[in-house]
Image 1 (tube, rainbow over the protein chains, first blue to last red):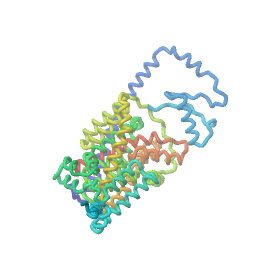
Image 2: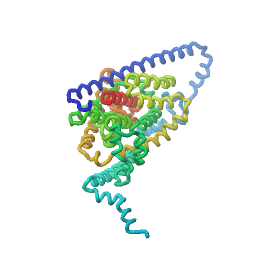
Image 3: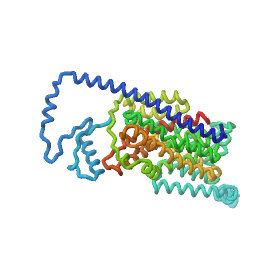
Image 4: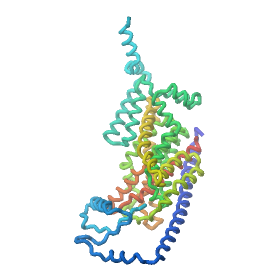
Length: 113
Length: 399
């Protein structure tokens, strides 16, 4: 296969591109299937948690009613993020956007795992 | 009695200066040109910061192998090795220091270890949360096959064209892996082209990104994708290794090492190994790989018209891969009713994470509140898998 003609080269190029697509499409199907299985499992776990007695809900409601700090723009929900990290993220976003931090409102910061 | 004159004459005759002057007409000038090229590459790496971690080693390897009479690298030994007249043992006995370094390239050890480091530094979470990214990683391999075809048109042989084409994968270890197997005499030129263009991605890609997408498309804000669980991240490298290596066994060394590195990172019980692979091992292998690759840039094989053709074909490969990814992104944008920002398509050319950063930067120029980085990392890591599959295909055809 050292010296190949233009026609053969064209066929190999098209075939190669098709093989890459074929391989990655198959992989995509596998990943989608994997994702669906895990999402179904998570949904089941969430449903089970929701069905459990809502005893712990009361303190949370109290926390939600707590007054906001003067000058702040509402509550910020943190999901698996340290307050120090959240402060850093907010400062970076404000700097990148070129706007003062007190003119921005952050609703929630979630760590994507 | 000692004859000082004889000693001085012997010293002079053994010196590189004497060899350079005596052999100037028979290749000595090529050494001088290569020493100049090595200095230019060092300038680009140190002053212009073009992939300095690799280019400094490549340039210095080139400098060392072109010093007359130093005997650090012996191309004749490798010609005999390719003809199966000698083995690694003879290279170890008769070769210079850089010949011994080069054994790691020839045996594919270094590219695979680098891939392990890349795997340990990669986060496949964005890809898992948006599996359609894999399509963009596939679309962005267009340049590999277009440059392969172009190289055949320019008179290169099949294995040479395949090695040139893989520059479009924008993946240094994959390019070195494939070239060392198919066309080792082109290794220096291909490695320099691949790493130089990777450093130039912020210059090469934006014009195509602006030309192939509309301002409205560039402003599209993509929705945050779902959270990916730890278990999924642990299972993914195992599934990919089994799946891709079964599909194309020639990719097994590259994909296997990439995914082993990623498993070290994700499994949570091998932090020490993950740390070693990402830092100490990666750094050691980078030193050996870059110096050995630079050593192959010997005047007699590097100063040819072929090298110029490789430089031109390389930039075409990069550009066409970018175009392929962007066109894939545009199609995906239209098919999803404008939910996908087509700029993330250009990140499918691999070059992790530089290409994803460029997608993010161009996106933010059009909409400062748009953060595309996480969305672009999906096609970016898909491009690594895609270029490994492309290399596996070319290796199975021409290997």
